[in-house]
Image 1 (tube, rainbow, N blue to C red):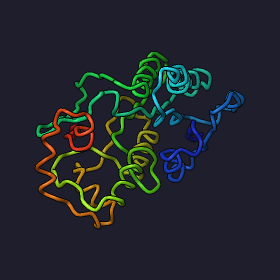
Image 2 (cartoon, rainbow, N blue to C red):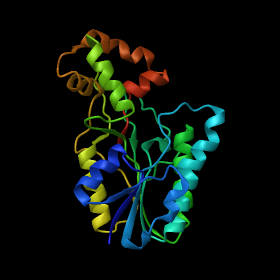
Image 3 (spheres, rainbow, N blue to C red):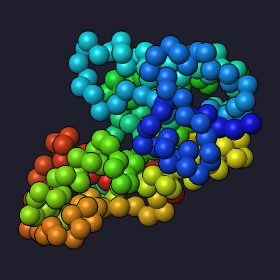
Length: 246
């Protein structure tokens, strides 16, 4: 018996497969329904629509891929241990400037995007099934060749000569650490909601400095200007405090 990753060639899935020997299954078409699931004792579901434009005409696709697909796989596979990759975005937070923004198990969900809403709906429907369910809500996942926000920030860091020196705290998780957490959940058949994160919080300025190979200059003067944009979502998204509890 072994682990099956539904969603082939994903950034997270590849790292999990390396340390678990899991199989990966492409679920982009209906062929996955012909799979023999009897040799698997757990499924890690990572397939999703993410980092796409959230136009009204995309709503049905988001629902089909992010909600309906994992629920259908859980139902039709018959595999009783299901690990679902969700997102920190189910809390709808961009962060807060100048004051802590700490998410706990008691923090209510409040998704704002199609991606987050459809992920949360999948969580709810999966929880109604008779399976052993583990839900991971990771913050930004980083590592070599990471997709999405991590890559965009890295490209920006390598182009800019200067960046604000501003101290904030963000939860992040390195992809190999996330893979180890998933392996532990799989090995021990754990269930519940998990907040995977690095051992230490990260400041955006320090992160950008590292992405630039220490070439970018951090400006304290620019850092003093950051609070002027405290009500702007883009400023809160970049410089706000947003962490999971330890």
